[in-house]
Amino acid sequence: MSSNAAGVAVELSDLTRVYGTVKALDGLTLRMEPGELVALLGPSGCGKTTALRILAGLDEATSGTVSVGGQDVSKVPANKRDMGMVFQAYSLFPHLTVLDNIAFGLKMRGKAKGERTSRAADMLDLVGLSAHKHKYASELSGGQQQRVALARALAIQPRVLLLDEPLSALDAKVRAQLRDEIRRVQLEIGTTTLFVTHDQEEALAVADRVGVMSQGKLEQLAAPADLYANPATPFVAEFVGLNNKVSAQVSGGRAHVLGVSVPALDGSITDGDGLAMVRPECVTVAADPAGVSTISSVAFLGPISRVYVTLQDGVVISAQMGSSAARAFAPGAAVTVGVEPSGVLVVERSTA
Amino acid sequence: MRRTTVGGKFFRVALWVAFGLFFLFPLYAMADFSTRNLIAGGRTLQAWTNLVADEALYQAIVISLLLALLTVVAMLLVLVPTMIWVRLRTPWAKGLVEFLCLLPLTIPALVIVVGLRNVYLWVTYFLGESALTLTFVYVVVVLPFAYRAIDAALSSIDLKTLAEAARSLGAGWTTTILRVVVPNIWSGILSASFISIAVVLGEYTIASLSGYQTLQVQIVQIGKSDGPTSVAASLAVLLFGFALLLILSMVTRGRKRATAADPAVAAPTPTAQPGAPK
Image 1 (cartoon, rainbow over the protein chains, first blue to last red):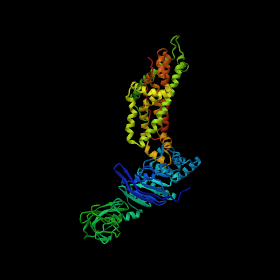
Image 2 (cartoon, rainbow over the protein chains, first blue to last red):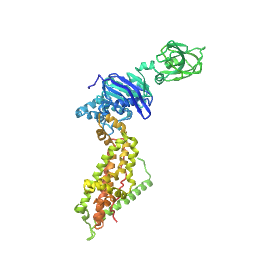
Image 3 (cartoon, helix red, strand yellow):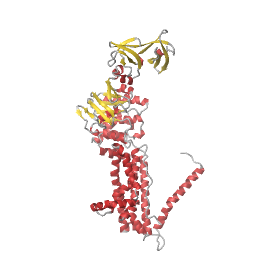
Image 4 (tube, helix red, strand yellow):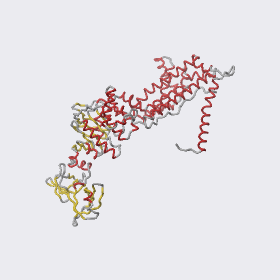
């Protein structure tokens, strides 16, 4: 099958979208490299879907520009933008068979019937649904419908692939499967892709880079591991992954947390008293009869367990460890807690 | 299938019989009367041959059928794009459009005729003195019924997502409406059309007061001199209406295969039958 392996760069610059008095987007700037999969992650109402719809041409920015492959497409209507889109709601045309759905975009481009059918069959093959080509949408499961929608979006060889929470309507198991499949297909075809989701696990699992949005602004855009280890703002630290908030003192670029001195990340307060955001897997717990902290409870989660510890000042924090290690701790036992020597973000008490 | 008790079954059969008698007996009576030879006794098909043989009656039938066709075409051209556009682009106007479409129900035919007299001076000035100019009034008159049917069909699909999907795949607005939306509200369009036909074929007041010779006006006129022919014409209109509704229900049922849930079903015919046997 032919593929535009190169992909194109996409640039959203200074996008603002105002609905009445609400600013859905507030100066969003985002550059996507050719062939990259960027996930926009954020709570509902943060503007991520608005950004995608503006890129698709289905919504208009109040100000700012959208450029694809170096061309300004801000004034190009949606049907001329050459973007494949998968929607959150099931969007297959109910009156057409699976094959005709996939061929629809090719028909709009005036491709001959033979070419349409063979390309549609290729696409169906790509998402593993060849056996269902003559069925109607109502005869497919939700996961199958979204696969067909993906095949339909890719059949037109779009310059950009837009995924608007394509997995939210599916149940957990299908969601994880389809998520990995989307990534496989995207890597195979190499189309620059924008994936909008509110599910952080989804975003971290599929994306080359994840952009965390809040209140119409991009808080941080970074590779998943980087985003997780080095949150740039309190919002990102809070939104991505679980975090304990532990009091800490900062001086000279280092933070003193739970009796351990660790590097303070960029964006931390420079001096004085604050709250450190510590991941549960960075908290260490050691049995110590003289310890001032006590185990309050242990939650068994299969391969891992989460141990809740009450600190001296009454704050409860969670520590994550292998279930075999967690077996050593019983509620009420005295322990000493510490922190792994990775960097932490320390924020002012009022912001966290 | 739930099993029913003997009593329940009896009740159901009794209901069907009562129902059948109530609806079919008048039809039978009309058929009987229209084939009776009033002078010589026995049977004759004279009244039925009159439908095409009587020049004035035949013309009126053609006029009425043409009126029905023109009304349906004009109604669909006005209503379908408007309703789709309002739902997609100006949802705030939905209440207003609905109000306007339902308004004709509340205005008596007599008032419409009097009110339209001035407008029709201009219509006839430009388009000539043809009964077909009634199309304009009839489009307004059928709006409430057609609106309801199309609205139900539009509500049953995710119009916004389907339209956006079509547009993202490269379809312009016209293509989106014709290739994506219309096929999915086909049952609503059919029922709107058939109801409109039934309304037009049943309309007497406006045509008569405006002085045009439509089928209904002719039926009443002929009824004064030739009972059987007028009854034959009435029966023909009734059967035509039944046939349309039958086709409608068969077509919509046939399409259920393609669309999972299809709530747009034909509303009952609001036809007032003219020239009923007296």
